[in-house]
Image (tube, rainbow, N blue to C red; front, side):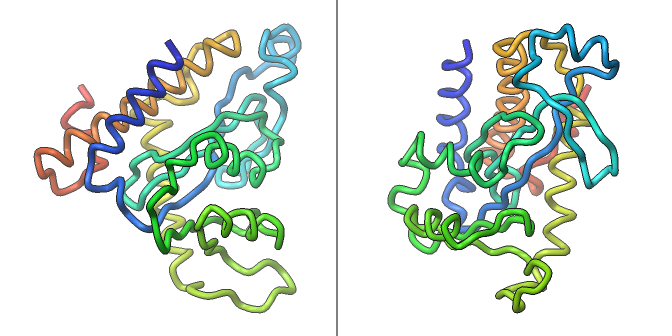
Length: 215
């Protein structure tokens, strides 16, 4: 099931005009798996799920993180699920290394990320995939290019995350096993991808809008 869902997501995403966008945004969002300490300790997800912190909502949670490459219109391009404390940079490189076709034939591809995605080796690895990293400067760094873009794009990223959590119930997936959670996350990524694919094909003004399907 999981392999079929991943295949279908890729097929639909590549069959849109948005697939060829030369700017991606990358971020992660929590997938909460339990609230009580007892539930966390007894869960089959223990060892993968872990305690983490969500800066956007100033809260701690026990669970996982969904990491997403997406276009500025919200189309998922690549994704991965990790423990809540996993190094976001390492997780980000996973989809690129697992599927070289993501960047095959692209020139001038840029990825916009927050300041947690840093490091010379990390940027060099992205450059090896043909990707230029755009991010805010960290404390003590000299200003980086295109800094004026980051604040408004942060609002775009949070809006996409709210779609996953609000309309697609990402944090109420109901999975109790690693495979169960993975399949349920994939279903939500597929739902967003399918909606964007349909909106793209009918010429809808807002490709990411789920209003027509949210009944």
